[in-house]
Length: 269
Image (cartoon, rainbow, N blue to C red; front, side, top):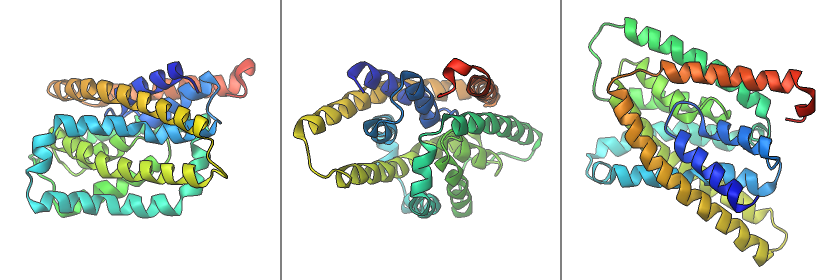
């Protein structure tokens, strides 16, 4: 991996992290196209570069994050329990998924269909949309978030869909998804860094500092684009629903599935 590739992946991460289209899925597809998907630094990068986008949540919601009642933090804690357990149990399988663009493509397609169907159900539900999240709602959202362990399903998409299907209004659901991303991605990054260091037989400081500089550059870019994405997403939700993202996922998923199966020069994709 070089700095140009780091910048590209950092840009993609920040741009897609908060939309229900799977930032990790997009990075896997792009890393595959660039021919760097199987490199050890790429596997670390795909998770750790999300830290920059998470800092953009801190930056945008710094006041709201630190001046909440205790029940807010308890709800976040309840929501991260399921993915913490399943993430630990399925760690080795997740590693395989990170090297499989075809799984990402299928997940994008299925997730797109689910988003559209969920929006239709949300629209048909004429009951008052709640602007608060209960403890039970938080746990269900956290449980559904476990599907995002499969790259392409999207952490943002699974949490947003879980909120909509529980009749919670869009803004409240999206903001909870933002806040939930902080501990989840924080834990995933710490786990990846831990695995990276302990897999080294010895530390070649030249390679180590090079890899860390790549991560730093990628995270800076993802932070900047993350701030822009959050601002855009909030404005977008004031007028539109999530169906556009569903259609986009379906088109992208079908496109890459066709490439995988029918374009022989790209068979290794």
